[in-house]
Image (tube, rainbow, N blue to C red; front, side):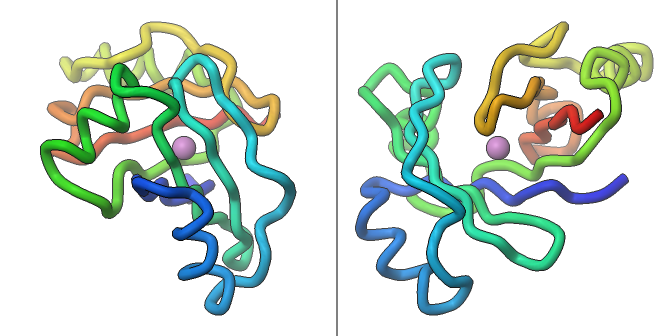
Amino acid sequence: MEIDHVGIAVQDLAAALVRWTPLLGPPTGPPEVVPSNRVRVSFLESGASHVELLEPLDPDSPVSKFLAQRGEGIHHLAFRVADVDRALGEVIARGGSVVDRIGRPGARGRRVGFAHPRAFGGVLVEFVEVP
Ligand code: CO
């Protein structure tokens, strides 16, 4: 299973881009608002994968809660899958818990779904559907 991207929670997307652009180059496009996760994101290329910078839209965003508890840093690991519903179903079948039982709209027009951090020893795992 290929890593699609690594998600990094940041307080300020513009400030984070100033830090990351010298390392990875400019973002792939303008920042994108992802309403389903209440975040604004930018992607930077890293080989066949990406780094996703996530800034919360408001205090109710899950990323706001993450920042309050753990501060800025790695937020999730995203794997590329052909069928996000099946990937979530396999986690459930193995006794793991999930945030999403089926996929939902994510960044870049792709369907995504999150397992619960409990399922992977404290690591939040996202599946990204790339048909
Ligand atoms: Co992500």
